[in-house]
Amino acid sequence: MFFSIIIPLYNRPQEIAELLATLTLQTYKQFEVLIIEDGSINRAEDVVKGYEGKLDIHYFEKANEGQGFTRNFGFERAKGDYFVIFDSDCLIPADYLQIVNDSLSKNWLDAYGGPDGAHASFTPLQKAISYSMTSPFTTGGIRGSKKGIGQFHPRSFNMGISRRVWEKAGGFIITRLGEDIEYSIRIHSLGYKIGLIPDAIVYHKRRTDFLKFYKQIHFFGRARINIYKFFPSQLKLVHFFPAIATLGFMFIIIANIAQWPFAALLNIMLGVYILLIFFHSLIKNKSAKIAFLSIIAAFTQLTAYGLGFMQDFWKRVVLKGS
Image 1 (cartoon, rainbow, N blue to C red):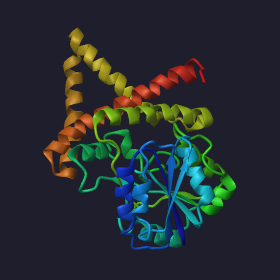
Image 2: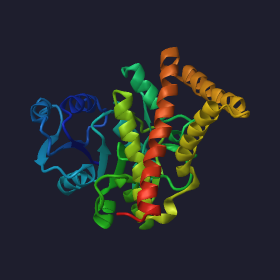
Image 3: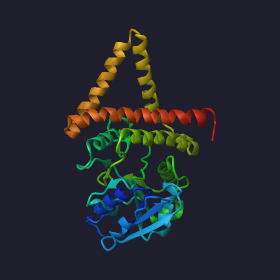
Image 4: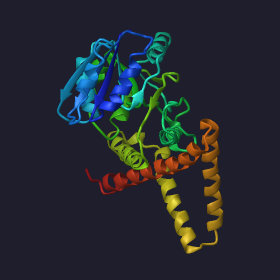
């Protein structure tokens, strides 16, 4: 199996340097790397040149179109039997491609996804954000899991598709706002086999402060409504949970301000939820600081997604805007 690793890049030369360093350590060597600069001002050409001779690497520049269409640009130029998509803020374990190759040899998948986690080198904040995106106490817990609700949809930070899938399904038809989920649903609809490779983990850095994390997750909430416009049947009850939680948090605040009699009970319920997050993160990360930051990250994730979801649900579903 020859893999083509495709990485869209936008103004992040330091990130791609760290990712490429991990790819030089891959134990499985049959792969190429395509870096596509998506109209960046802060270009990574010099960084990529530093890896010539260490990797079978190819660098391209194009006008800015967004990550979906930039990946299509890479698909069109890839030589591999299988295309692997990473985000530029990922670190790749040395045995990643070997795990994927062995898994596909035993149990063929036309497309696959893998989970994400926190690397030991991540800052406490990055580990807390990673926790919130993988925790059973947030909606992040249904991602990258065989126990997820409904069809499994690979996410583009860690996703692979076979060449024959691309030749049949084409590439991404939207470039942002849930482009990977739309693509996955379309691949499913054509009868191809998609699944999770649980051991094909990547270390996903995500964002470096809560404001950037909020903006990213708010975008994800809006993306879910964008997917609904393409595939109405894919809007499930679970997708409403962050919005319901956000409204619940607002209601608790109002109940306390108004001094309603049942406010104390609501506070106890909220306190139990906070303690569950704290102690679960503490056990997982073995750090009180990360556990405390995990509480903030979890609430940031739920409210950001919930507000983004409600914003576009009102504008695009209720008001039927474009």
